[in-house]
Length: 142
Picture 1 (cartoon, rainbow, N blue to C red):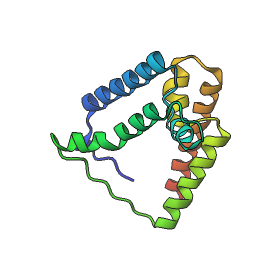
Picture 2: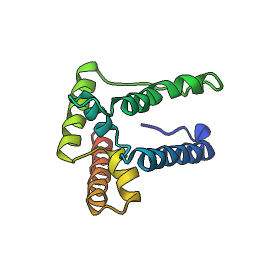
Picture 3: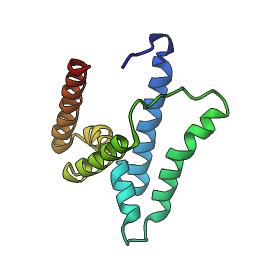
């Protein structure tokens, strides 16, 4: 993997981070819910119907926001250099990890850390360590 330093956008990244923080704060303040994507999706798939509207709205916002962005600026290009079976297995492993970890990186890293949750601090540390080791191993293999 290479990073294109000419396309590095710290200002836009900062603004994006502020928007993520604002969305997480608004959801917590007005709905009393944590903005963890796996929890939002998992709750939508459950039989409970009382809170489906905000879950659908949140997930639609995730899907539609790049389309709105594309009206004003071109989307960054992306290239996936692996097969569909590997992508499917990776997605299933991520889903399994979010169940075992009681949440996903967005729930623990963004929302849990901001609430000073010790469980989220440990989980985020494990996520980051696993990511560093994976990148190191993949670099050693390649």
